[in-house]
Length: 336
Image (cartoon, rainbow, N blue to C red; front, top):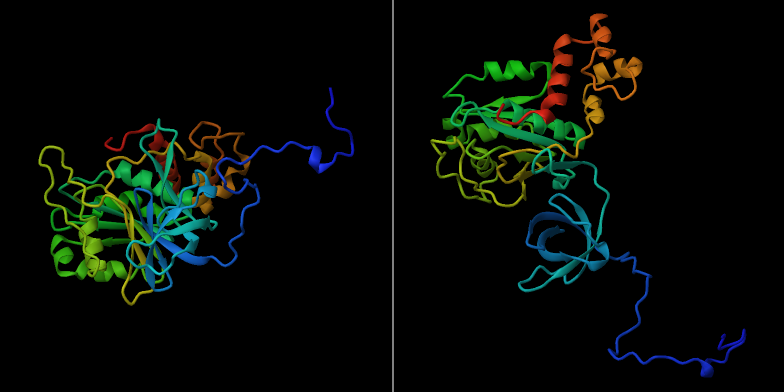
């Protein structure tokens, strides 16, 4: 039975008292047009350190952002106490659109992807030529993630005094990836940092590599005012070093107008989130030849048009080999 007619009097409507005494909820959210711009430098247990103008500010994510998380490299909008003084806390109310994203999963069966860093221009893949031995499949996986995320790769090969770089460089020669070869002595004296710095000026560069390869030592040399804990030793049985970086951290390059993002050492680099069809975009000389490929072509099957494309002289056969090696890396373990 209908209690009220079309024209009800406000006095006739029963209103429940608000026992909590707070304001009623609304779906209209503030636009925060006066929010300050900031850069996320590091994330630690829900607290984010952001650079706002020339000072660092501790902040937390606003509830209205839901499950959307800010990561190192994100450009964000902040409100609240932006003084940066001790025991103050600001709020991140907006995460700006990302220009690039480096992502990984724990392994190839893990559906949950983790964003490692946002808005990086390039990915420096640091690997030792010996002690520990290089792991080409891990390098391949990092390359796939870089190509998929819109980052330009850079190979940094360390400990050249223990083994020559020729074999490894030949493996990636067809990809035309820039590289720097360094020795242990150069890492200690700073000579390696000088040559690597030439590739970093004016860019945001994320450094990745498994433990013991000298990644953190190199980062320390690049940004000496931001010293990090250095690897103590490499395990003689597993060939792996102890993790010395526990969270990603963005560090400013001195006099270079660039940034270095030091990331935790990785033991695996899962690619469950990668769509193999996007890897071809990193091979423009081959991409044009896929026009005649069958639908959903894996580019590694008998009917693939790339074989004819290469046979007709449109691209180097070594480039096709490299593409297929990268595409197959999801089916292989990093240590293979």
